Length: 503
Image 1 (cartoon, helix red, strand yellow):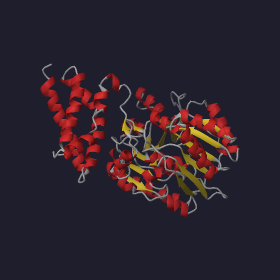
Image 2: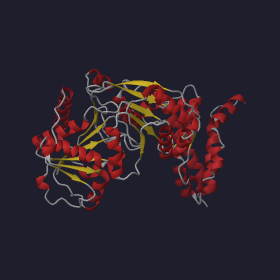
Image 3: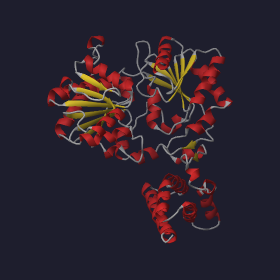
Image 4: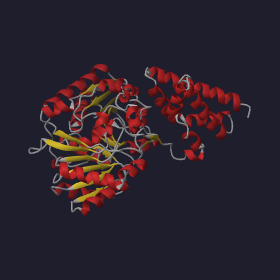
């Protein structure tokens, strides 16, 4: 356990004290087996809040608390805060195989994969847990742990209550969402720095959407790795952020390394960081960044969570994303307030502001929690995808299963307009699309059941096509979209049964 004398407890802000009372009241009122999701923007002090909740829960209910994180840095950060407020705790890392002296601890902090491995070997690995707190609750990896704590309360904490997997919405696991302070109110209250946002139009032609719903790294590397985009990035930095401590977020490692090379040639102090760095090298880079006033740090997928450097003055989004969560996480890295820092700069080089609105804009998180698909569709309209001519990218290995050329050459929008121009019903385009999918499956299927398996592998592609079709129709609703998908699959299964069942 960490020495409590090394760390000082943080004084709770009034809104944090109010939040803690609200959450404990919800748990008390609703009793066991009640799961609550709490939303608070990055920089609002989630760790401070849920650490204090753990302390008061232990005192009130005389039961232990388990806190789940997905990165070791977050585990250590949480342990330090708990130690500072006199909560006996233990971090369950990969080296901890058993906890024989559990009576010495009231709280456990564990990385989800490590704990899952321990629980698979022994479902009673940790005893007496009454409350499970999930940090960064929008990640789906935590779900696998819930089965071991069915009788406990679960408190999820996140800045963006949207699941990382649209097929697994958060309202499947949480009974209620409690919305905390908004970004604008935290800025007005002096808790967060305000953002001055600068947008630069960029040509995102060539970006492709992967199976996770976001733009693929490979297509982003092509778009952002070219000379023109490197020059645009350099121009934007010199126009807006020159001399400011700056974080640059990229989609791919090659792009980030090229950014480092480009800026070094201009004589700027810059270093690159990605997830392949050793702990020692990572600490070295972050220490340099902290101590260098006008440092530039270009990174990939490593500083969006668990990184806290209040001296950051400028954020550059040198990437496009369709993830609202990632958008907020990246900008939030610059929102920490200091006595001489009440504003920071944001440079958007991915048309992200056009996609999501300004970071400070109001968002109806209750709507996002209750109706996540509708909430996302209203922001990730297919108009964005069509405007940037985004192409669907099949999952890796699909070329070994299907004749991709056969599938790719069919353009449902083109077929729709051809039908209309020829005086036929636009719905015929759906029938032609179905025939295209059917012939692709038939060509690869060994029998009917194998055909059903192949149909399942094409669900994302079917969804992609139907979305394009419904955008061609002026009177399309989410229910109609759902109806088409269901009908499409039902008729495909029937055709496969008729042709393949006897084979």
